[in-house]
Length: 568
View 1 (cartoon, helix red, strand yellow):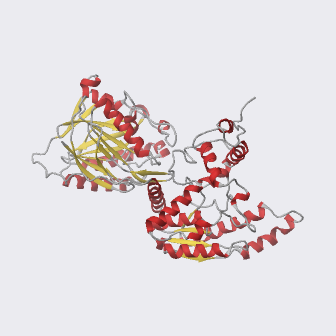
View 2 (cartoon, rainbow, N blue to C red):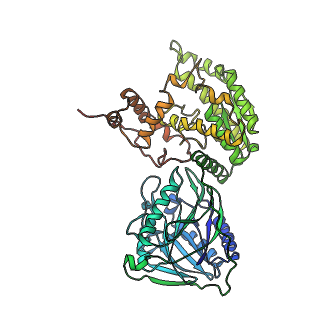
View 3 (cartoon, rainbow, N blue to C red):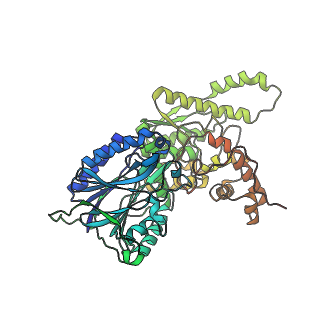
């Protein structure tokens, strides 16, 4: 047995002093509970992902100095600490240091550097190779980093072939719906091939577009989950792990690894731990909602803000964003701003007021007609003789953005935008209008999912947080009389699957038509998705909850004439 402290912490990129403080406190707790080793996430010292902070030579040096503070705090209880480590010739490694008894015993370097989707590790890091096992309380422990455990015949299998009795895998694995099942499949495949138990430690918290879900795991040599940490929350989980591989070096072959002594077993047997309690799995909608709440909370608070404001139209998108914000920050820190125009319906204002009451957030009503009239008069000479159209509609949206930004500047708030993934995909937004703000909580949520999430929050609350009228009305921007989204777009129940195929499935117009989709619908949606790229580049960051979000996941040229039509 090895008593392992899984330190699933919410760390912040670049906050070296704060990260060290949190890690030292966690180490002390694990030590007090009789732990043999405390394990921290990937790049815990620097925070993940540090991106081009790694281009600053001073950054790795400062991370090394931070590691020394953690090492100095260790005693018999060892610590596995992720950080960037400088090597010879200017090389930089994604590494995990093993510390005990006040010093660093050794360092393991990540071998497999992901360079797809949101990952860009080959930009800064060099690949390492497994070099040694660490003897912690008499157990030969192989240290691996995130992607290393995904590869058949890779670093983990080399460590087990070299004599490892336990694999510790440190991670900063971002969340998307379905990710836990994917991880379990990978871990069980590695265990099937090695017969070696795994301790999988993951980061938790929001970092710009990414959110990390935690859910650290312990799997025994048979692939069964014996312990699991919470989802979307910090936890220090101390567990007794049965070590020893059922196949080990005899099954995989390979030379014996060099062994680095780290710490010895305690002379006094620790008190037995209570059996690990199973963690209830979250339903998909609840899982996504928890991710949105955590990401919003961390984006606001880690960037030094206390309050947010949201433009409330009486529609489902702004209602869901306000609901997320109220849960993330507390209702007293959320300010709803109602900005009706001559085209706003009475029920839209009433629904927005009801939402504020239901959530317990402040609601401010600031009519935009004075500014709207002024703009009409100012632009009248320029627009003379031309029929009213999109330009006049967009002026209203931009007035609302000015109001929100003025309030934010005056009171030190942060503006949350309310666009969903369907709107972002097809460019159904006003640049410098409703797309203006600091963070977009639902920009990776398709419109039909917005309705599902809003309805689910009402079910969980046992009362109508989002008013029934909001859920029943037809979507509308209310920028002209009797306007409906369906005037400009296909109905969302048809638009969403096609847009999703373009964005998340990388399908082309020709492929979707060949698969039987309606040609007119496909061409319409495909054109809208393609021409909206310039808008997306100027939008605020939003939290990623699907396997492919806009932003780092999907990098399409703005100037681009490829449409993927079938060729004759």
